[in-house]
Amino acid sequence: MKLTTTLMASTALTVAAVSAHAQDMADSLTLVSWGGAYQESQMKAYVEPYIADNPGVSVTWDESSAEAVAKLRAMDEAGNLTWDLVDVTAADAMRLCDEGLAMEVDHDEILAPAPDGTSASDDFGDMIVSDCFIPQIAYSYTFGYRNDVAEWNGQVPTEICDVFDLETFPGKRSLEKRPHNNMEWALMCDGVARDEIYDALETEEGRNRALAKLDTIKDEVVWWSSGADTPQLLADKEVVFGSTYNGRLFSLIAEQNQPVEMMWDSQAYDIDGWIIPAGLEDDKLARVLDFLYFATDTQRLADQAKYISYGPARKSSAPLVGEHAELGIDMAPHMPTSPENSVNAFVMNFEWWADYRDDLDAKFQSWLAN
Image (cartoon, rainbow, N blue to C red; front, side):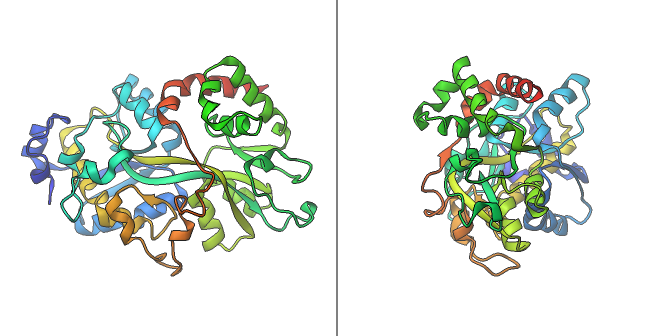
């Protein structure tokens, strides 16, 4: 089903003109994503098939998703929007939506239903955390560690607080150069109950307590800003322990055969998906909506899980996930949501981070600089 069918009564997008002139779709797309193994999975699962169906369309990638909020703010101020579709985390989607930098959408009007007719909004369910957010995957931030560290005397880390244990597990660690997850893990390992973490982080005392815990390992930390950093640092033996997205570690372990293991304890669940930048020209918006209808259907999201160990956001996609497309291994045991891996997981509070991210970013960067 194409755009003219799916947008007949759309009001959330106010695109009556777009649906009436779908034949005037732009012949190019600029997609913003995260690079690395994740972006490669997007290419294989739905960008390449879409281009095969639409041979006149060209796709350009920008790997700036980690800076999406700041860059879209700057584009808005300059009146120069150069992106067409942006892959962001749930919390960033909320911020962009609140600031009017992302378009509100009616999910049932612009997205395909499930094969059995279930509406898109019911199929995605709780994954739709914002009126501007079009979910793709569930993933987690977790740790990988080298399994050949002689100084560890045969011991291996099994829990999150081992990250802070420099005596038992000496060596460099890599942590993301942003506050989220680091602050939560620090408070967990400083004795704060999980159900009290975000209450603590609302106070100056709680924030200082988290940073004080991070101070205990700060001299041994290599800070990363790209999801590809930790896998490379582990492969190069620059660090022995590092946080990153679980799919990046899967690629390092299963596809590259590096001597690295996954530590699932206290993995932090997150959701990733698309936002449409506000202010697109009609022909650009028409192309974006046509692509989204295709790229987020049940089969395409299931296909993405054949290339990377992220769970598809649609309920109807889950039964279609099977073996890795190239390795032939069962992907289910590698998913962050599998029962064995999710025993002690926690879910990031997306709404909290959407409200407090700017404040925490400023405090965290100031701490890093000292």
